[in-house]
Image 1: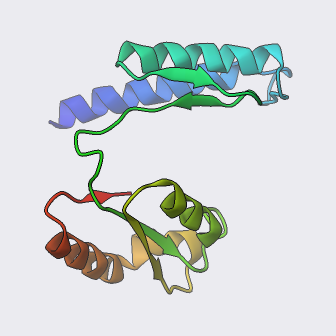
Image 2 (image 1 turned 90 degrees about the vertical axis):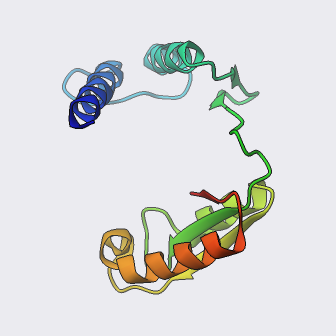
Length: 141
């Protein structure tokens, strides 16, 4: 199992490096909207998604969208946010809940911002255990 994880991690890093190479400026990552590097990124990601059977489209304003319906499309979904997280603020978690049928949001109170996902494991454990006890087919995001 560890070997498979190492191989997968290596593949992810190679893909990250490839995406980082698509830039308008040498030595940094710059991709303005509709620029050739943005189209290169879209092309690479589209290829990877289609290789695993994920339908891909580009919407009217140029966002690349890949959507793969899970094996339990009507499963209840738990979304957990941290009130002090400025990287993924609660408004983004609320948006997820509004877009996922059957989703619910739980907010963790933490002084640690985004790191709260690592440090508030007891709160997360309680929320997940409670959620699992309520749903026979949970989906945790």
